[in-house]
Length: 131
Image (cartoon, rainbow, N blue to C red; front, side, top):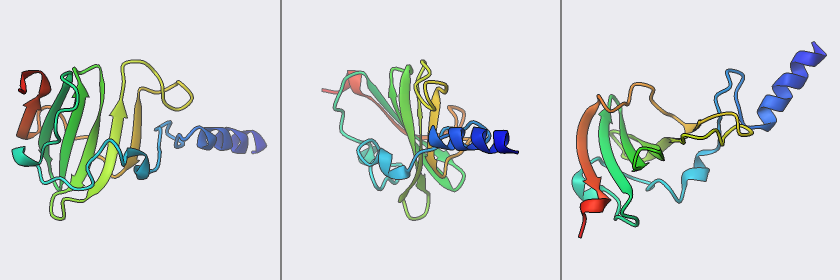
């Protein structure tokens, strides 16, 4: 029993849940994700780097805002479809950097495993083609 408690304590210290899902507080995404987003093209963030691609997706009762650095790494910010308030986020990378350099994804708040590139596309912006 003591060994199991030690493992759980170590996993918790790394920010990972018992199922090895890397979890952080949603406030960690305050500078990455707009606090509100309604999924419209006008609400897409301003391009700050030409390597960024933004995509808004309908994901059931959530709106997903994907912020991708040419698909290598990025984040998806999740918004309540009714209130448009930020409720969750997920970051990903191609190199393990989360959970003590053991995971390629990190989660905060409410996310959706069904919000994918196959989800209904609401708006997109490729910053490499912006003036």
